[in-house]
Image (cartoon, rainbow, N blue to C red; front, side, top):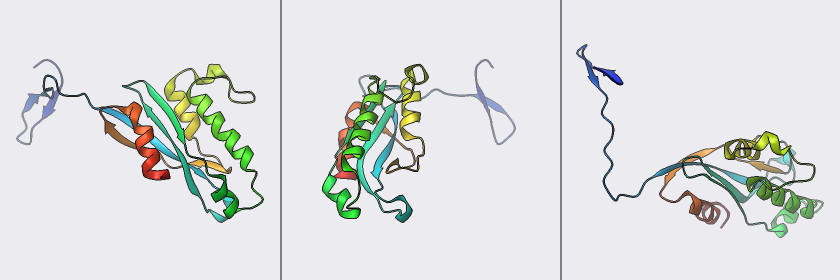
Length: 154
């Protein structure tokens, strides 16, 4: 037998079958996402969702979508610098689009979508944090950021 094989319960082996693709059926792409949270006072662990980061390697997608509501943030902590949080959210979007960011990570470190996604979802103990990374399947990962933004930040 040539090619990949799988063992059988009876001790034999058989060739792995590749799944058949139906002609004309839309292709599903795997994607990963994380919810962006605003944590006005990290010591209290209170947060609200402000956006999502979506990455699909197979569809070459990396997107940040944000719905920033400073009124909610200042209700949780009146001393919060809402403008600084908004600037950080803009920085996240610029990094996703590979735009230069003053004081941000060096561009040569983030030369692929996967590396930029990794930087965006890396754990931080700041006012802006991300959830654990989740995964899904989509026919159009480029549209998932809008759908997930409505679902988690609606």
